[in-house]
Image (cartoon, rainbow over all chains, first blue to last red; front, side, top):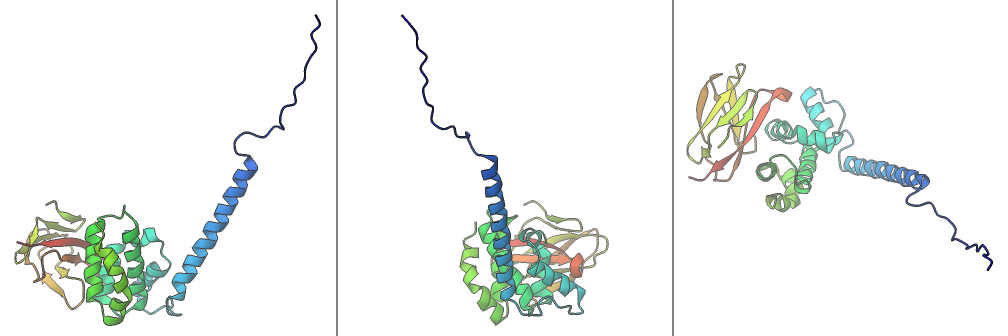
Length: 151
Length: 86
């Protein structure tokens, strides 16, 4: 009896798992998307503000608080939240730029379950918003219900 | 209740409607501000640094969160304290 070799055709080989190229493409796509999204969010934030929102006012404290309200990251805003809010309602209660920052803080405290001292801060913000002058109180009123629901 | 705050401003004990707030401040502060959340509802009290100061709780409903601070400008130190119903 004679043994003949038999050659079987294997399917074309495919690199197992994820190729390096696809990882690079996915990473680059994510980076572009994140940058674009961040830029859009920043532009949208700025669009809602007066054109002179970050012009120097002659008041260093106000200028710094305004920069925090507009250009500060969420993390920076959260870090300085108590000083920021207390300064806004006690000294700069008619500054639209700072109230814009309070709107940002409201959104963050509602969205972030890990926000420090979350429930108490949300209730404190409700008190501040309800005591604000009419235009700012009206502007932030839609957020009050969400703030009240924070536990 | 554990003390609220640190580094130059501490509120000790519970804050009950109609009662007093016990506040300890740092050595450089002689005034404490207590607010329900607006300039119109902010009261300032002289305090003795390094001692427990007993100040009246503002007339606010139970559940109100008070803003308490010492210092000025960007050096302000702030704590939040909830007023409990008796």
